[in-house]
Length: 419
Picture 1: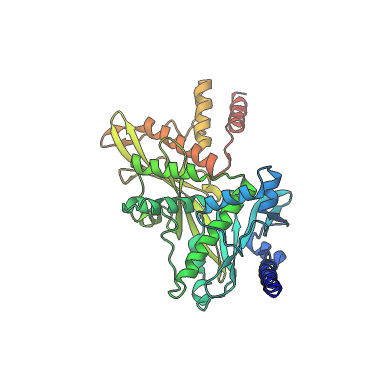
Picture 2: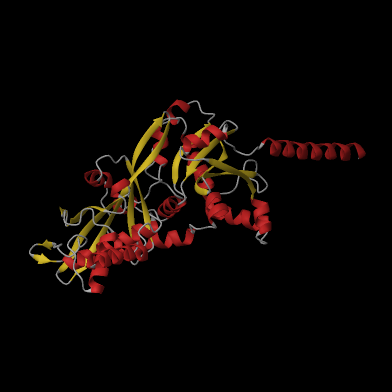
């Protein structure tokens, strides 16, 4: 009897020791060489800060408990946590990237179990909108690593946010077959170049979603809410909101010839507005590749007294094109009248109208005229163009065009002209 009891106790202690040993092997996923890696990922950075964060400690600080937060994050992930690699007491390392005193981005990664091996390490650089600027495997125990560690594979993740993973999860759950709607699935379009690593590829996608869930919660306060994303996706489907086409890239390259890829964001307006965020791949050092943001494409429906029109507006994001209309299509016919118009022009017109003054030098709105099939729809086009420029400015340019400041400068200019 005593011998059996001793044997049971030894087995129990051995199992406990094995669990502790397994847990002790899970070290935080950190950059191999943080000084060099952060400057490669963010060439403009002047410094960086690193921080270790644990789920249980965050939950306790929020006074909801570590277990409650752990389960909430699991719900957002849409999958069960791994009992080895994803316990609530594992520290995650966040790198805050600085330019002077200003935060310009984040670097964050995580261990992810790999089939038939120990684990991979996924590393990502993010901008201040939680968008992936760059992805790479820091560790990859794959027999086909030469097919996965390539610019072609890495570039497929440029521009993604947690929202895109939530959209993918919802479309799969609803078994959507409409090709136009499926063109919104940014995750479903990602291609696996390693035919022997199907499971590893799926684990990579899961690991990326996990990283995005943690980033969104720990650094952005659960900004991208799963229920809100699902509601936006439902509205897109039910309202039959205009999209570019089943093959958007063909249309996008006519607007931005250097475009390599795009992602589609769903912006909470009435109705929901899909915005195609367009990138050019920059393979600056193989296999590393980052995205150069080129601009935004917005497909819209214009309702006027003269009828309904299909409208596509593109807005630039590079240098002198930043925040300016680059193209305008109505019923697939191009109109150049609004090219390079920005919110500055609209705010200038506001001042001229309010002061009942005229100035041809700064009034680029007044002379514009847009006719379609003999119908003058100028005011309707101007109204929607202004609305979408404001949307882009608020959502992506972080209020670059400050109305009060611009109007004051114009007022000062007009006063000087009067003298």
